[in-house]
Length: 92
Image (cartoon, rainbow, N blue to C red; front, top):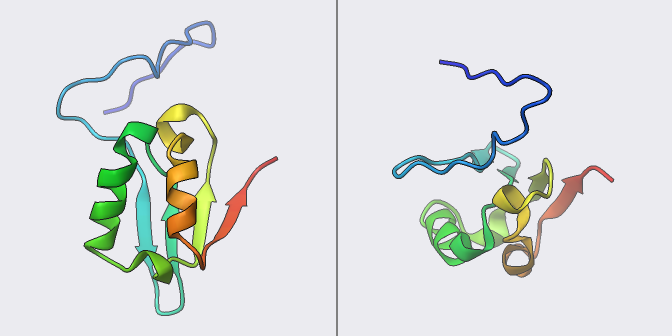
């Protein structure tokens, strides 16, 4: 199911529904472990615990930051030091 908003409607990020999630993704290939986006800062510890249950954080080779709105990027200051081998890829 898709939700569409008119160009004049800007409150599409404003709602949080209990039990829902938003996407940060971990992709693993033979040569790379890529993390796409992070989470809100208050979830940084839980986020890293969950990632650590799948791969060692030092195995992550790339972190792709799609945009730096707080819902996807405010955990960056807490997460980046835990990813010593990751190259950060983002827009200007």
